[in-house]
Amino acid sequence: FALAAAIRAWESAGFGPAMIEPGAPRKSDAFDPKRFGVYLGSGEGRVDFENFVRSNYQGWDDETRRIDFRRWMPAAARNLIPARELEQEPAMCIAHVSAELGCRGPVSNCMTACAASTQAVGEAFELIRRGDADVMLAGGAHSMIHPLGMTGFIRLTAMSKRNDDPATACRPFDATRDGFVMGEGAGMVILESLEHAQKRGANIIAEVAGFGSSADAYRITDIHPEGAGAAAAMRRALEQAGIDPSSKDASGRPAVHWINAHGTGTKENDKTETAGVKRVFGELAPKVPFSSVKSMLGHLIQAAGAVELITCLQAIKTGIIPPTANLNNPDPDCDLDHVPGTPRDCTGVGGVDVCLSNSFGFGGQNNTICVRRFAG
Image (tube, rainbow, N blue to C red; front, side, top):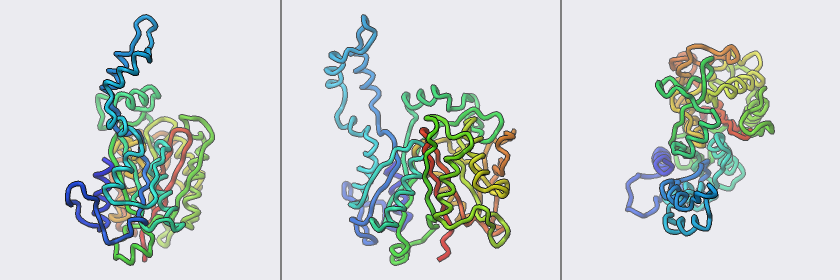
């Protein structure tokens, strides 16, 4: 996922063709490799479950009903493949991507759960702002569709139980919601300093106007019930962007034209995120479109924020706001404009110029990106 998305981002940025000599890194005259970095939010890599379970079985002691590590270690030495074990490292995504693209600038991987790839984009933005890089590939990749990942979220009661109707299982902001549907994949974007992008004649889609990050300091699996941490992240992103959340644009609409909700479809998340939006936007909150694409894409965990940020860029390009699918019985506690059912065409009222994208992770990790149409 990571490499495929990185190559697509590379190509769409105009850095060169995908097909090159096998084994050779991609090269471009558009930037200095030492000024090109990679910042990702990705989880564990390829887990060799088959051989790991085989080793556990061979190390099992029937008398103690436990794994005897004196047996397990020799079994693991026989069964486990070193190269596969190395691929479990979360940083392997960066290793493969940077090698493929010939990147020799700053690289990093953050693991802030479901907020990770939004944080990666925000931190990449900050690296460019402080002059440490000219170009950054940022985003995330993750797949939790494996026995350990699925079982863990099932035990946390975070996933929907509607296995008989998966297309309508994820129902953010709906009174009958019971959890999310797992997704997998990757999303990558290319960030550049304005000077660098203009110098090479880049097709600029939008600008990162602001980044906000906060911690709830509350509970490991719950966000603050009044949305305090979520509100803090949104406020910081808006402040950096120079946007007053109580302001309106020239047409009389709220200055923020769409909020991409974290919107997992879990009972507490949707209610508290709605409360956070109300804290930030006050009386204007009901007039700000606030929808969840997880209702259609599923939850990509650490990759979710980057993929959803790309939907914000598409909204700016097309003037169309994605809907919240499966919202048929609105929860009274989720009473904002969740764009139920069908996309909203804003081309007749001036399009979509400013978006917020929220990502909140277990442990109370909150990140918000503000993107704005480039007016330059």
